[in-house]
Image (cartoon, rainbow, N blue to C red; front, side):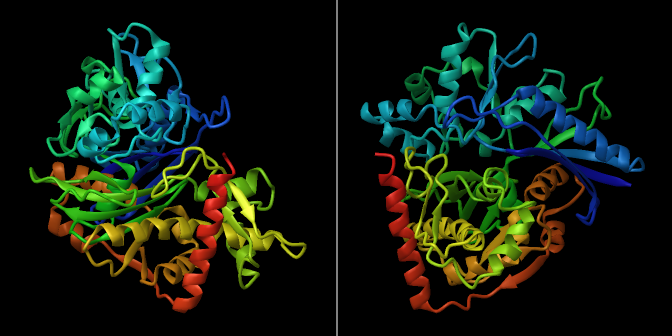
Length: 487
């Protein structure tokens, strides 16, 4: 039996999924790892835990299906998370700085004050924000000293380095486009931006196609040697590809720790006037594809906060019946800006607020307000996409763990005013990485992939236009309070 192994390295866990030729899941393994919070607003991961959990689950799924022969490995990863390691020892010089981390917000303010924002925006499609890798890398270099023997990578690069025994130092365009150092039109590292950030080019990985055989697994790992590593993409671009949003005007939203709404804009770089990002989408040809993206920092993490910090839920899945036990949020509005606000607001200093509380407010109202907050943050992004793009948005494809929540999907459809189409599998991110690898090794063709994709349940809006407008206006008032609360 031939199969494709997808390595899905996420913000809170590492997963491995084995897919057969019909894109069915043969086996899944998942391990959570520590979230490290050294100071308020700082978020770190131990690079060795990232590696050990990821290689551990890879070995686990292969052991569970011993008859499978792996034709290729696809890698998808949390983006922007930044690592620096010693090329000789292969050991990281410090913990990884996670995409959620805000420690370089002041550095971004300084670059903005120096007049650099327009240049970064024009070259990279990004805003100057602590979310991205560039200022995180500069911070790590300031701590590390002499950079002569150091290597930089996002998580995909780190995993490939370890999988190949330190022989291969690469990334793909989707991950490179999230660093503040990559020119998305010329598709190469930009020397002027590197100079501004004071990053030596020698630290950077080679940029290789998202789909293509780029290396093989090394000897001495708990998985077989010689397996082609043939697909690489950042998690959101992988999900876009896995959802088969491969044509201009198609959009998906992935509901995970954060939520990430991505609109395929074809071969055109659409520059946003409303706080969105222009980024590179997966391409399997020499012709690049681009996308508009809005990143919401905290969505599923808000449910985890209700569970772990407030003790309102025994399991994350308990939020659906609790929220469904009331007809609405009772006027409670939750803005989960724990690490600032992402698109389209880009306020690093905003903090979480809960407003509208009365003596009648209950845990159920807060649970419902949390689901509404997940959907409403995505509405802000969707509205910005409508303003920026002339492309019609007729449906939204949904995936990620929280897309299994029927109530959330219905709330999202109601507030968006368009159908929400849940993917037939919630594994769209891993499936996208598997597709990229499978194409490269001849396991699938593009025609196969279009035939294999299946929709799950469709959620049709039933909310009135007046009720929708009132709910969104109430939300925007609460967002302004969250911004003001930090000043």
